[in-house]
Image (cartoon, rainbow, N blue to C red; front, side):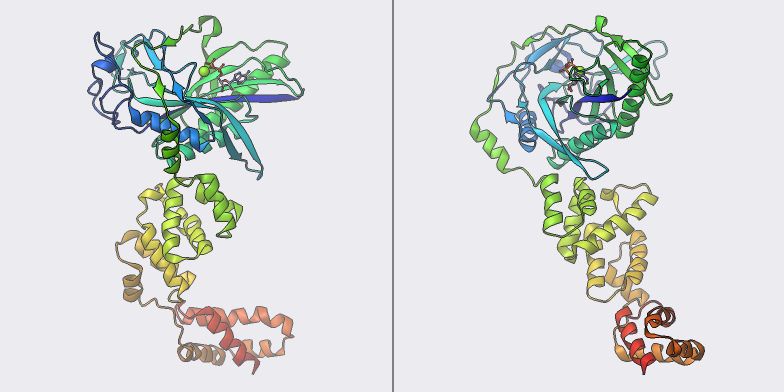
Length: 481
Ligand code: ADP
Ligand code: MG
């Protein structure tokens, strides 16, 4: 039987505002438990929420970046449920009139194909607190620092067709919010997490199958694994003649399985209604245009520009536009070294290998973009060969010295003076009469290969410093004569 997978994602993105969405308490991560929840976050009697304008601007930025409609009038609603980490008994969210409706996201897949995924909506809401189980014996601790932290929840249409597509979509949203500088996207700290709704149906069937909702997944790898394993589970049920029940499930990475959390019968009826404490938000056309004019260049545009203007391959362009830190690094290096391909090669090659080895992110690189740019300049102007440049790079990795002072201290300048190179060439020819004879007795088409021996010797004797073009030119001249 041929099954088709249907996935819709709800992604929660924590906005990096200084204060909470309806109060002045700090959103800084990592503070001592319950030191950053004020009377508003606790829902104490007599307090009133006040909307944080920065959170609305962030939501508008996101909406504009995906070509969505921005509501002129947007409304906050109470989503009512009981949970120990929700002191008010309701979460302030949006229901009928979210800030952002519609919009599209382009995703690139491994086979080089591209798809457009429609976004249903993105709404603003407050986060809840956190239950803490460690260190409380049989009890549960509650930390309310996170209560009231601003989130946008981005809901996709059920258009994703595989775990790979879901991950590509999630990565694209992650890239976007970081480019827009509206979230740090830190997945370990829970600033970027998603619920994956998964169902299957027979190929060709129009009606959607019954879905399971996989809650709160906070890594790309887990999203992929959770969806894969859930698809397998559902196929098995249907092929055995059973029925998938609509329910919320949790992914357990340790056992690589999903487990039922609550079924639909236990599902909450949230009884949404407009929050009487908050006025509707009026967003003017001027507000929208001002924010639009401040948008940075976005990954899709950058990717296209890298391909068209800088003549980089699609692969290089994808890599260099997928992560804002990498893009910034590349652009800074390029501004100094002015050779896109060479910069791309160094960043994706030598630099990335060195970072991987030490498990470092590019923004922690001991060799800054400026220093790498200065190094690449020295390759461009002929001071260094690629080989000696790698030696300099290694030294730069563990020292603060500039490439120029390292080149000077190590005497690594490339030898470009012909008469100097000629001495190396002559001595190699003199020292290897046998190879010389072999060369001269060979037909022209074989000589190209044989010359490699002489080039290698000259490079070795000159400590890798002789300019390879000049070595080749001189060798040809002398061997042929
Ligand atoms: P809720 O989770 O609050 O019930 P929705 O019903 O609007 O909200 O759906 C939330 C997400 O589930 C959306 O991303 C949507 O695309 C996706 N979705 C809805 N139905 C299905 C389905 N049958 N299979 C897979 N995804 C679905
Ligand atoms: Mg949901």
